Structures are given as structure tokens and as C-alpha cells.
Image (cartoon, rainbow, N blue to C red; front, side, top):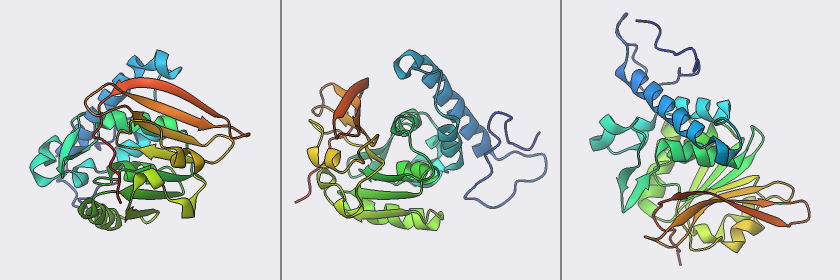
Length: 247
């Protein structure tokens, strides 16, 4: 066996389990993670005409490969952690399919200086992927228990550029606005105007699934221009849990 690091992805070095496998025996998580990345890449190529490019930004794939997804799923789903599918995390919520996480992150078009708001933090997986790419992530979760769990999990894994709070995602987090990007991991019936207000003029992007529960939802990109003009485009149909309002 080799070192367990594929040529195309030399970044797979960060593991939550610090124990080194015996010489010549590869950690099975390595292959599961590589398989996940191959599937995500293949899905991205199929979407090339929609995205207007051949695949996802290499930095996004690198970040996806570094995050230990098995740390963000319930113990009973650990064996399925690197399957390219959504999984339940309790409270009627899910951890998104890795392909969708990569797609939404890629559409956000952020860099290492960006400040990002995530609405619907859930287990914290999407926040961790973003934290690998940007300067600061602020996350809002409507369910208090999930918010506490995500905060503790991200701290334990060393993501010190993420701040999580329980709150109303529709209201955003005005104290830290404007944001270079806002990503919403639950479906709203229409684009929340207060989130658009909190985007940075001159290129800030909101990536959000828009549509009613149990009906067609569209993954949508909203971009704010220099003069605060807003441009909206639909990407693909998706299925997300509904966004919650918190009183």
C-alpha cells in the first residue's frame, strides 16, 4: 500500500483519529473519503453546462477532503459518513449530501479573506468546510440543542474561526454584516430580504434553496452589485428541510 494520499488530492492529511495505522495497512476512512471526492467530482462534471465550467474549484474539493465528516454524523451512521447522500442528525434535520455542500460552497465564490454567514448550521459540517476556506464563519441554528452540539464539536476539532449561536436565520446577524457570502442550508418560500440587505455590495452572494416544503425548490444564487442592484439565478432543483422562524 502507498501512503494513503492520492495524487490528485495531496491534502488528505488531517484526521481526527491521531492514531497511525500499522505500516502497510491503510485506514479504511481514507478510501471512503477518496471515493466520496471522486463521486462529487463526477457529479460536478455532469453539471458543467449549468455551472459554466468543468467542475468545482480545487480549493473547495481540498476543503471537503480535509473535514472529517464522520465527526458530524450520529454514531449509528458513522459507517455511512462518506456516502454521497444526506443523513439524519435528529430533530427532523439532516447533514447535507457532500455534493450539495461542495456545490453551495463553490457557488459562494469566497476566498481566504471572506467573512461568511451560515443559516441552518445543523451539525456544523458545512460551517467546517467554509472554515477551511475563509477568514471567519458566523453560524445561526434555530434548534438550541443542535447549536450547542455544533459549537462544542467545532471547538473540539480546532475550528476556532467559527462562531455559532441559536437564533432566527431570517433575521441574519446584523452585528457582523455586511457579509461576503451568506449560505442557507434550509429552504425558504422566498428570498429573505434581511439576508439580502446584509450582503456586501459589489459582489456579495447569497446561496439559498427557495421554494415551499414538499414542492419544487430551486438552489438560487443572489448577487448584490455595486449599486445594490440584485441579480438572481436558479441553479438546480433541490430538496431541503424548511427554514424555521424563531420568535
